[in-house]
Length: 379
Image (cartoon, rainbow, N blue to C red):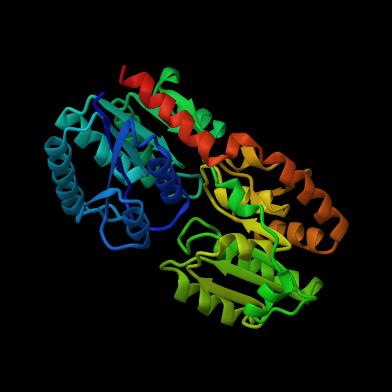
């Protein structure tokens, strides 16, 4: 039988939650049934990982994150050309920018099946009203070009439908999966701490997230100022890279936190680094699911996170961690202090967190569900 040709379209080639999700999906699909290719902006860490998997890569040279009429129109033409030339059976888009332009290109090019994964809507309550209205309008419009809308958590479906984005029959929930086995590890925690010049008796609060707007890094730093007054023997680790790095460094210095804050940059040893955390923090303003929380929880870490998006689908407030309101560094500080000050509570929540991560959040479960969806739409 002829293999099904699938094109995945992602906006930027960065190692992020959505990027890892796409990579795991492409690599996990049955090679005997599917030929998978990838389109994305060129030059980035994700491209190297894609090529390692022997997946054909199509650079979309005009893909940029910001709204740019010229680049966006040119990216549309690039994608139309790629789709028409290669005659894909399925076009599967990701992210807001690639989702809108990619779905439009797929429809213009006559792709038989179009699927879009909502990793998280690009609008939230802290967005400027005009931009928020524009993005909601665009998502409503683009929903008409998709046969199915995959959401990585149930709250995203509820949110989308409440805003008139798509119809109920279009939605399917497929949880973003992690490679659980990679995080079931035992390491020498003190030795790993030494790598970052952290003393054995110091507590570690860790945040794994790209240094971009919307991830709440400033709030964590402001909270850290209050935390160290109560718990002085603590280090805050920021794992990831991004355009806010210099600004966050300046804020760290101005708050007098340089001795308490570590910026690791991009790392490939996330399971090992997460193992040294006493608490994992995610202070996002919007989040589809928060896969870094899954990674911390499978390691038995208590978490502090914001009550947004799909995070509430993962974290049981008061059971596996503590949820706080976004953009509220005072409440964030109080939650961190509460957990740092009570090792028994941390252990209890961490144990509950480990039990919470079951097969629903396994990467292979995610791939199997997506593969079943592909099968149902191509028969």
